[in-house]
Image (cartoon, rainbow, N blue to C red; front, side, top):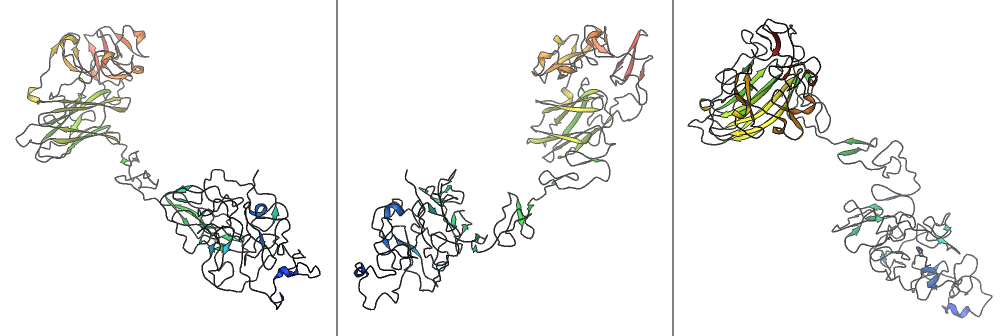
Length: 602
């Protein structure tokens, strides 16, 4: 098994030292003088790594794993591998096993880091030495304090070599290092500094992955990552890397209680903040960067940053961020549209009522009597205005809805000015919570927009979204009927049934006849509305006997629907008179003195 070790032997310039002989005779002439001591006698004496041809059995193959002729530095302090062949990977500008540098990849080394006063450091052609020939001459004092191998951090002069194992970055001999690339595909591994590979295109970032089309910009940084591509700017052979890309020697970072920014001792990074947040470098905490977006909200939290949009002086805040007065109407329907000089009419009626009748709340009947109480009361709807020249709004309010289903429609009145289409917008507000529906309409069209089902003090909205052309109140006629078969056979939501009066005669009205008329998950109720099947058996639901009705109700044999008994004579169920507590119907209907049942009409 071929073991790759990182070679840290550095070739440095050596100037002829005094004491090597004034006659400048070749050192090989001393080979036959075994009595001579010191560097140059071809014998390894105390303090020497090698001496001329005495190489302690080492070769280019044993040291760097390549061919070539191994030599000894002139001062006998380290091996000279300048004549060893470079690794196969030499020349790819990436640090691979057995290389000290490669092309422009010099790690953190510079001429200044090696003790020179300036100049340009390059890598030797075989990637086994740094070439200091371009550095300006400087005086450097090696410092191998505590180091037994590898280059000293001051001058790059060898501190020795290991008889067995390999030399680590701390200058200590140890077992052969096991690289830990894990998920890294390029750059040095963090354990041994051995290359995990190189990028065919792009550059290698600090995470050991390749990034395409990014030009690293280390500037004056000698360690850490460049801020542009995240590629390595080098590592510190001694000390720790600061956030500024400089090496801090003899410094112990202190990131206690800090999540980000520089530590206050060495200026090394304590971490980074996530997206939408920034680092407070004074205390090392991350602060959210968020711009609140209250828009039209007047209370409660904004949906983006969860900061307060305000509070309500009166009422409570609903989910839409609006202050709702607890005394607000149960149902509010508001119509607006987007063209001037046009007339749109808002209609709201009970499901059994006929459009444009006296029971329909619209421009001609702004306050129809729905509860039989004399005068306008909380149980009656009220239209605030009839806007005929465009835009609206027209608003219908019902303070106290009864148990019923209400239909909301819009009519685009065909006038001479109605030459373009318009977008009608209906806002349905149930106890402060609103839903919005829109429709593009042409003149003469009627849009049946939604049904509002109200029961037990709460309502729900079911879209209809049905459009009828060439319609007006003057051509709106109802069809008399005795059975459902007498009414038009239309698909949901335009289905009609025969609404009988006392089981004798009636007229066609909007609503389902049977559950097959409804969407898949719904069933047809006794009120001829599509609703969840669990609602069957309730008031006015079809029945065959009283066992099929919910508790407190009985099967009315006249209509075969679940009914609620009440006490005659006939009278209105007004506030504070709980004559129909289950159905919350408007009346107690007395039938010929035989019995009485709850009903919404007399």
